[in-house]
Length: 253
Image (cartoon, rainbow, N blue to C red; front, top):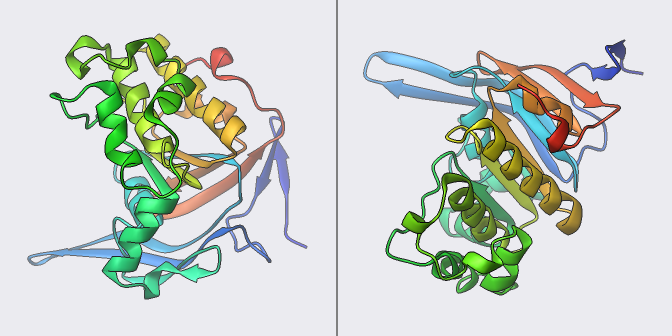
């Protein structure tokens, strides 16, 4: 039986492979970048399971490997060695066409900067996804889920930063993805607006059952997660499960 440590009300589990795993499994993943004569190892033998429907926060300083891991989970990048398995499908053995299908059908992305098209309304930005996804929701439904039903015909320039980020979330969830991957989604927002965006992500996780992974350097966000995974220098250093989650409204940083 694996060793477990309790500290400050949080169950801590060593960062090891869990038998049986989750529906998303990472095994021995490394990622090395070669830039001229310089070699950078961004990930070092990472093992990780993500379970269906859970809300996970990945913590770590800049350069810890969080974004690299997220990009590999989402099929935006491939590992140098190791396996990434999604519902029994070995993504590391797939070709570009199959990875594109995986990204299109199964994964939603939310980034720090909203990546909205300025010349399109909120509805039209969301429709970019719904027009290509096979089981998507209507753009209006997606925007109503993030409480922007009354802003559906507004252009990005007519929206606040928090509203633009919620449009980005609506676009990500409109395809009904099984996994939602968020890279510093509150990084460009003020405190109160950031909490509203986190509340939206929590609501999506609860209502749609979407497995959600949020990467951040802000440790204050960790309390709202089911699990908190800490990274440093390309490796997972701790994997903790919160026994008592708090709502986004209760967060402080």
